[in-house]
Amino acid sequence: MNGSLPTIIMFVALIGLMYFMMIRPQKKQQQKRQEMLGNLKKGDAVITIGRLHGVVDSINNAEHTVTLDCDGIFLTFEQSAIASVTPSENNGSAVAEEKTQTTVAKDTEETSKEDVSEDEEKKS
Image 1 (cartoon, helix red, strand yellow):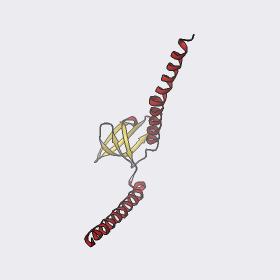
Image 2 (image 1 turned 135 degrees about the vertical axis):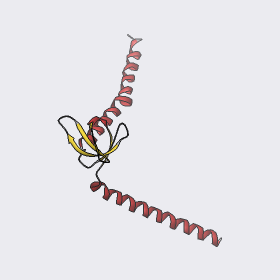
Image 3 (image 1 turned 60 degrees about the horizontal axis):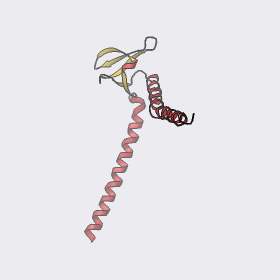
Image 4 (image 1 turned 180 degrees about the vertical axis):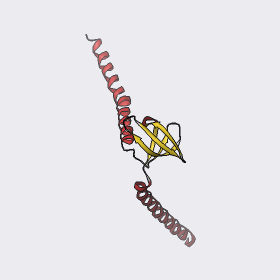
């Protein structure tokens, strides 16, 4: 019994390590993907697993299919073929404007800092 106790402890530790390094992150990733597909709606820009870019035209939840408008060509895909989703422009425009304003503010701040340092160098 003395010789088997360390073996059992190592085996349990290995299974615990496998759970935290492999199984748990995979479950989180699956949950995030299911949430992404659950929030899918008409007008969202999507990229399929084949790297085809399109806009969602209709969603059939009964058959788990999505019809995409790819520059006037309507294609039907399984929902599982959606690799990533970009929300429709109505929802994303405010976020994009906010990011642009933040970027402009940071650029202006960095430019003013550079101007101050250049003025100090010229004075020296």
